[in-house]
Image 1 (cartoon, rainbow, N blue to C red):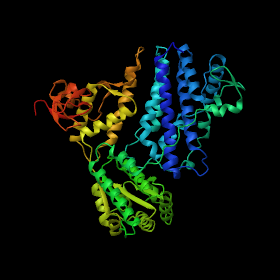
Image 2 (spheres, rainbow, N blue to C red; image 1 turned 180 degrees about the vertical axis):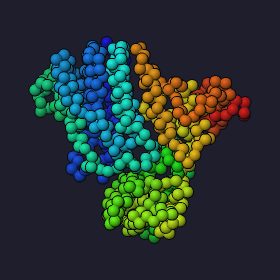
Image 3 (cartoon, rainbow, N blue to C red; image 1 turned 45 degrees about the horizontal axis):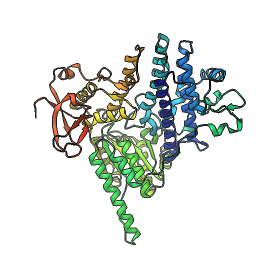
Length: 564
């Protein structure tokens, strides 16, 4: 096992990351969004754990089959994979038989079945880039483990990348709810995909543990790696800390914290026998796409749950299509059904202004709005409704209906992210997915976002623009390294300036980089002292000239050289 120390170690670590991603996603759904699961779903966390195993097996088998050869390094990675799945090392005939059985079953297993929860469940859509990253890394590690990437393997890597991306791409940071938020009971069954990995159990009736002792079949379940335990419920301070960790949104953070403080005070007054103040918790979120509205709504739900204001604190996302029916008499029941699913939690309605057309008769939309208003009032102790959309349209909606204006009087404005904040979001995605960014790539990211921000319109992507840039960079990196037979571990995790491409930013916008016309404005996190420095310091450890604190100059505001 010592012949291939580097890639097997990274392969094993990536397998663990895959399990953590799937299991934590299952725990999130069970804990905060159980209404999205069918009532007969026994153990969704275990199902997600099984899905990750099936995914890992299919990636491994697909790449190994590409050139119809099973090299010694590939066999060793197979041993690592079996240890990850079953907690034991298989080799020789046992390994061969296990992989043969898996190969026979994998042909009928669709890629979409393995990643479907991340596409169909809105709370998981912000994790799609992590799924793509893990699949790409697993496939590349298998293909390159013998140091010889041939044409068949290159085509297989491209096929896997395109297949996964076709199902998961364009999942926005601030989801608009249009891709379907129906419960899993309305979707094809996942049992076949989840059970696939178990079809490749070691073929013998008795298993052998790492020390060579026989293990009875009845003990097999005990040997399966158990999913990680569910995360503990957050306290109010922990939920607010999660909000504080978000990039930007200074005004939003202040409003949410102020509301939490007010509710805490009311609880203390009631405990002391003093009268409380009855206020409406329904809200209006205004802002352009990708400004973090859905993300903040989820955290607000956690805050309300921690305070005891809501029993569950889960978030149900919908839009006009989830409330308005096609025929007369169906809209009211459809709206009430949606509201029922959000009871004891929060109902987030994106593009809420589309419910009431300003210049045309729309009886169905108005029926949905009236039903929603009634439920918002009747169930105000068990429900918080958030109406979200573009600022101007939301103002017109509130003016059109006095009932909406009076019940939704708490309004939070989400402003566009600035270039530095967009770069920080991009950097956060890289850290979460264990990518490093070369200094030249950092500068290109800043310049591209600066141009995009200065030329933005109301359709500016904001946070989802940062996500799209990250996903595009990962794909370009994979294509750039596809023909390199001697790729090392550092290259697998480093994004270069060649990987950064802004498809809508003209090439002329980057001429200032080559001409050395730029500096970056760095601010010391300890004392607040700031200074304009050459761009070569981006991503480097620097020392504050005022307080001597050392910090990493990951990102800075662009300024013209000599401007300060």
